[in-house]
Length: 263
Length: 290
Ligand SMILES: Nc1ncnc2c1ncn2[C@@H]1O[C@H](COP(=O)(O)OP(=O)(O)OP(=O)(O)O)[C@@H](O)[C@H]1O
Ligand SMILES: [Mg+2]
Image 1 (spheres, each protein chain N blue to C red):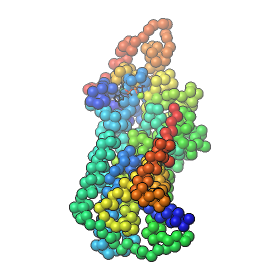
Image 2: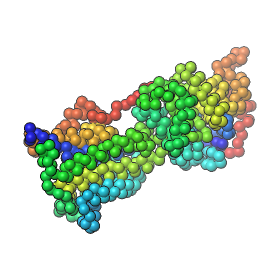
Image 3: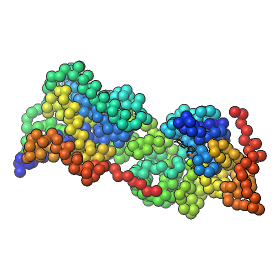
Image 4: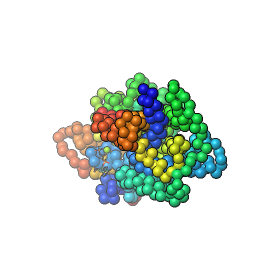
């Protein structure tokens, strides 16, 4: 569905945020993109949504396609009409608008009928929002705000939902709730999901496939089960030690062979 | 007492005109973050065009009130396309400078085209004074107030309930996120210029029909500026209300203190108000919760 091939991304024509990234999100799959701070995860999503241009960033080589169509050079409002929705890092609600108006914006491109049906299903997914529709979004708790952000994204009727660190700054219990709702979206609606996370355990528990991004390069990829079993990942990302050996990502190089795209 | 009431009522009438223009300032500022210093000149152009169209067609005066917003929408869209859109993405400061340049340019072009002699607004309606609560008013004053009330109510309802209105407010808060929702922010910019020009076109015709069509009409736009500062530069209906306050204050100062102070009363008021409330009476405070 979403294909990124050998993308190299610069900010201000100088800062290399992504060196060489190839990534696939197949229909109906949940894909986790893991990596430390500054690895380039958000940059990849900005390249997909078209927001990169407004931050003086550019995909200087490689390709980004959705269902075979190139997304490069398209404005964000054109990209989203392909059926791609983003839950941005830090939620980025319209804080001064009501929850309802935030959701109305989510359904901006849909018909009125589709919107009210969509609103019902968002409320079904997040019952906590039912009696908060007329509150100012900025005054909700962090967890509720994340629910609004996801609901807003869902209301555009996406086929691919991308989430940038949905667990950021939330209490563990709320995070569980958010991830449980993502599971429901996958299981009940067959939604395709690309999720960025720092919390690898959480992300791999949800995902079918995973990618590990370091310094703008994909260092590892595989099924979630493979990654979760990989000793390097276990040590570096899951905080588990297997007999006290210290690991380095370079040790994982053999697995990287899987990632080979013709340039 | 009668004198006071007279001053207040006619202050409300001129305040209604300031309010219409003030809503225009706020509309553009809210949607694009730019103060349009050519607002008065845009108003003047629409008024001249409308007056010429009425003269040409010999249509009755009330047709001017239909023509003015229509011409306004056209002028707003054209100016936004030609002058503002190429500047999108530049610092707001640069765009504000462009509006100042535009103001000077429009003033000279208007004089070039229509000459510098003031003229009467065609078919300026009846001059019979009508009595309301014992106060004598010109019909155009009543008309100005009625149009102002409807425009303010319409703008309020549009921004609050319509999908496009919500999109305008959302774009004001975050252009990036609005784009992610499918909003073409260039259209929002065009829409705000069209709306502002339509409002100021109405104001221009109302003012000109009570006074005259002349090359100094743009000054009314400047005098409306305190209205929007007072109401809150980002508050459309707040600016409408600010217009009434400025209109009444001006008249009271002119009537009781000194008629030469009348011209600057509005600016004196905003200096004091801004000391107390830097965002204006109805301006937005930041809602932030992390
Ligand atoms: N607008 C920008 N202009 C210039 N450099 C940027 C910009 N945005 C990001 N960068 C740089 O690009 C690199 C990758 O940033 P990115 O936001 O993609 O990282 P990330 O993996 O999402 O990190 P985090 O987990 O902290 O969100 C960083 O070095 C960052 O400083
Ligand atoms: Mg990030």
